[in-house]
Length: 157
Image 1: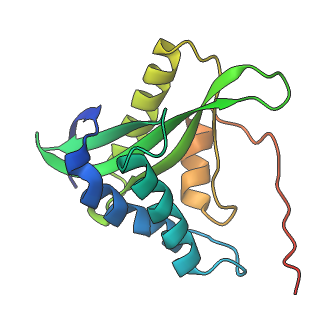
Image 2: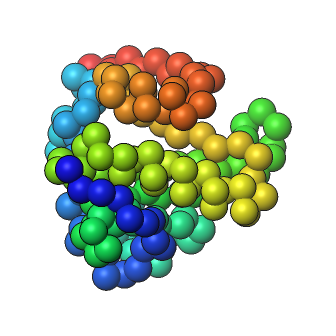
């Protein structure tokens, strides 16, 4: 397993790595009405918009092992709390490479995102996770996240 040395800000040079790593989202619990292709294309589209400058505000973080090997990324976005109207941070994406699973890369990214969110004055951070992604849900709960809203979806034929 790689040893996480640091988390740095992402750059345009990370584009291919980030988009390729984001393909892993389809492997972790999308519901039956969401195809892997739909999940991958949606994430890739948003990331392309981010890298091409069409989305303003998100912060990209890159986890490195052994000084320079990229092993994961997180995308931290500004958001507004629906109930209070207060600005908050939203962890829009967090993914690690298959080789980095269980290495602490996800925890390093999560904690770096929290630190950056606090530094920006946010008092709350949210995230979404597929219901079937039990491993990620356990990680988030260990790191102090709690379920607030459960979203129900009904495909309409």
